[in-house]
Image 1: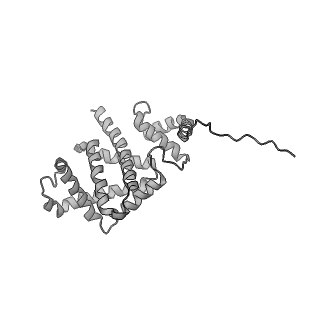
Image 2 (image 1 turned 30 degrees about the horizontal axis):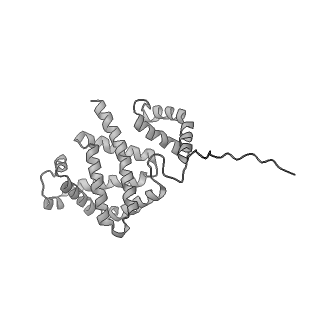
Length: 229
């Protein structure tokens, strides 16, 4: 008996994977608007950039999967893994205190004006910074904040929430997106020094992309703060 097969739905030759993703996102747009207003307390019309960020996060959380880069962060599974693996080199408990202090010293050497934002160790020399209990306390707290990236990197809404909290605590002290971008550049160079053979072009690209995501969310919070006066 001949069985008539149902035609298999295929993408058109000109329809890219990105197009398919966009179609899937549109399917959830109405649900997203409800989600945004009820859960995130944001207006998709008033904050289009951050709203899109959360919109795709919501679609992802509903089960939309891709073997390609995450549609929000642009990070692949391999990118996320290389970030976690290289972080372990500087983030483990045995060395984290020393490495945290070293990063801040590298930041202040690259951008001396940024030391002025920290009243507890403003004006200290490099030698004084190396042994400052206050710097070690603050730097270790920053390291724990960076550790949060590792625990939220696979959960976009939580990652965005973590970055928003960082912005809300740092923007009132004058640390804007520019300062965060400069910190990111110093951090990537710092990682190259300490990761040795484990560092690679892939690691550079992955960390750089993560910081781009950070700055999108941070800038949205900065713009909201500016608009509110």
